[in-house]
Length: 279
Image (tube, rainbow, N blue to C red; front, side):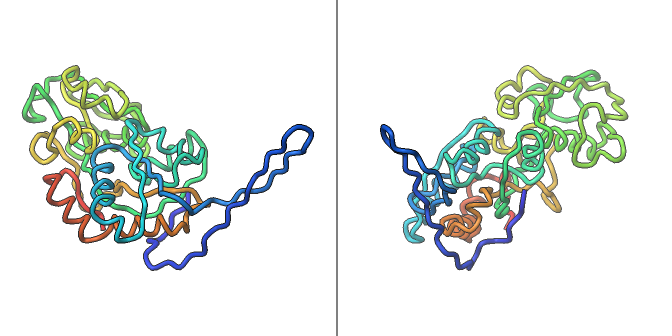
């Protein structure tokens, strides 16, 4: 993965699209390296909440004046938005953090370009059965994400609040095997990130990503029994594309709008502290 500085005020040349002509009958098909097209609507893969809502606000209120045509494509998992970027179904996505993207590249391959951080969704511990971490019973089942980046993030949340101790040297890559001290004998139940909120009743508590918590009607500020600190947090969600499209002027315009005062105000007015601007 490469990272790109903010695309604000970048002057770019439009990349020319090379046509690949297929022959008929006895004609031979010729192939060329096809340059990434910068024509047409910008297709952006998102998690529905809050990413999709933020982009819908941009599409309805800001995009036309900026000369940007958006196509917002929602996904309910954390894998398809990246695979769709690689197969050309999308030009960009907006749903993930740098640690998640780095782990995704290791596990799935592909070439990606991180463009810009937009917002933080504080990870929280939620429960339907207790109102405080002190009330969690010994041996409680704690739901955690099964993807490496969010699993590490969830375990770190528990460690930062003194519920477990992680083995030294595992920063950024901790798994259940790295829990060195677990005085209350918590059991960890790995699930798809999207399933943690909808199956909350099946655990004593679960560590849930902010977007899925909000989508399930939970308020990170009011309903969580533990919540990540925003200050110094490396887990901001941002815009990602491919190296071939890193200088696409449509993406530059999207980033300009996503980091505008209008979007800051939209975030602050609509998410009650569950989504925080990172710009």
